Amino acid sequence: MNIGAGEWVVYRPPKSVSFGHQSRIRDPRRAWPMVQQFMADLTRFTLGDRIELMCYGSGPQTNADVAAARTQEARRSFGPEVERQGTHQTFPSWRISEAQLASAVRFALDDDKFPKQEAGPSYLAFSYQFCWNEFDSGLGVAREIESRRILSFLIVTIGQQRLFLQPHFVYPAAWNSDPLKDFIDRSELIAPFRFRDQYFVRWLPPQSPGSHGRRVRLEATWRRGSVSH
Image 1 (cartoon, rainbow, N blue to C red):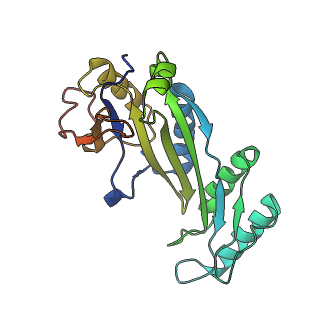
Image 2 (cartoon, rainbow, N blue to C red; image 1 turned 120 degrees about the horizontal axis):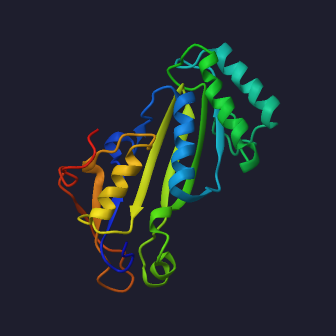
């Protein structure tokens, strides 16, 4: 595909849906392997710098016994929580290393061993940054001539017996190119969430130095004829 100074496409859900989607499969234990497969098959990714685990304290939305059990288990698994700063009351939280991520995911998934809470009892958040394998050729040139950032991101949140995904996907290809539509159709088959066509936008090339280009809405029917949802 032509990765140059032409227009691109971005997929990003709006604030009205918390910038994301619940996983296609509601059971987070079954949904998590879909995230792993999607990232491994389609991208060259690195983990974001911040991986955070939090355990909710007791309150109107979180049972005291459940909150205590989760916090105690987190301390056994990951050591003392991060020291609180200032006088503001916060829930216990842990900074998780990349080596601990698999254990932290298992911990968060174990929320299903307790009665479902209105909030928590666990909250694990981390992110991926990546480029699509499909667009590998020409990426070096694009980085040299482009002020637009070509990296895509996916924020993953696990807790409260669900998996929530916040994608910011950058496709360095024109919205009306058949290769782009074909790639989105193919990737959608293994995506861990359902795409919404109205959340894709055109990203026009910068017109002046220091500009990052303008984003323009696409019609909700722009992928007419693609794989049905």
